[in-house]
Image 1 (cartoon, each protein chain N blue to C red):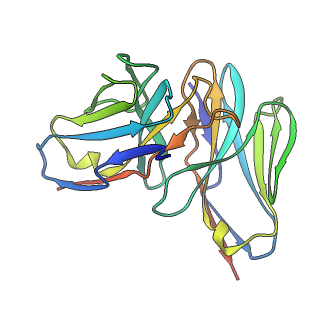
Image 2 (cartoon, one colour):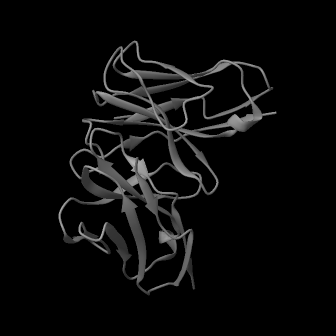
Amino acid sequence: GQSLEQPSEVTAVEGAIVQINCTYQTSGFYGLSWYQQHDGGAPTFLSYNALDGLEETGRFSSFLSRSDSYGYLLLQELQMKDSASYFCAVIAGNTPLVFGKGTRLSVIA
Amino acid sequence: NAGVTQTPKFRVLKTGQSMTLLCAQDMNHEYMYWYRQDPGMGLRLIHYSVGEGTTAKGEVPDGYNVSRLKKQNFLLGLESAAPSQTSVYFCASSYSRRAGGPNQPQHFGDGTRLSIL
């Protein structure tokens, strides 16, 4: 099966940079995705990595190291609206997407 | 374009009652999923479907049944509700099995908040 580990909570200051790490164990790894979920809302797709390296989408970037089974989501120029839960999710083999337990990000003034 | 629509949005049940949650998608996706989300547990897959007329078990299938009689609809049933099934239920759909990437992310409904007393 698959397992993912990510911190349960992170707090950061508005305007700063925060990194949310994710380590995974799986066979047949295909890619790592990140989803954002605001309180009371639905998860929405943020970013995806299939190859090693950094993918940038505006203020958000995601990194993957396949050899280390590790990835992270980097949020720059933090805004209050970035306060949400962030989930890493593994695509592997023929199984559906498997999600981590989520990291709750609190952005403070 | 509605995307993924879940019905109902809220429901309170008594232990032992039965109910069906409905998920409908208008994106012609082959793959549909039911997740439950509990505090600190992330999203756990209950059942999923890889096409009309097919279903498969996920991580936490006990106590639930599903049906996919039409491509656009995926139903989740609770035959005899238990307090442990109090949760937020999310339906999702995707174009392909390798869902999650930039060209084929999973699209989620807004969730059904279910309380069982």
